[in-house]
Length: 267
Ligand SMILES: [Zn+2]
Ligand SMILES: [Zn+2]
Image: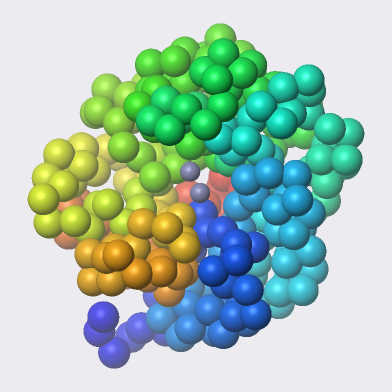
């Protein structure tokens, strides 16, 4: 990381899990460390009912530091809400600093919840996002065809959102973009052998791209195998800057505008 000009950049971590036990008692320090390398905003993403409450309380506690929230139930835990999205969760979505619904989606790699239940609960989230008029944060692993199909059939283009930690093929990315979605890259973009992901990133329009950490998971190459944190989003920006041949300053400005448009931020 370069020292000069570091604080001129305004970076955003569009997907981190500040409520996870790995960050317990350290959230303030982790935010300060990220701010020191230019990270000005954080979208802290929930994955179940309890973490949805937690990320909302983080937005109150760290309002001045630029912490926002996304609430929802991860496909891993979808069997817990198969009967419908709880009203308590729906109520939380009305808060101003809750900027998205998710993470939701389909994960056929782990299959922690049955696939049929995952699809049902993903559809519930899409319709909830439409009711709440907020974009979706979508997790897809080894399930691009089904997930993109559901986004289309449930009319997710009405709200758009982010395909987070993108891991699909080029055509999947363009299909998501056609539905008004953004494609977000995480630590895997920094892995030297992940050439296909770098090639896809090079082809996609910068107006539809974002960066994230998915911390505490998926640390970038420089810290691979360790706990990831929002400060490391800087490495993802650097990898994307290189893949696209766009200077870091310009990329940071473009991605800031993308996030601002998606989350309806005024500044
Ligand atoms: Zn995810
Ligand atoms: Zn995540």
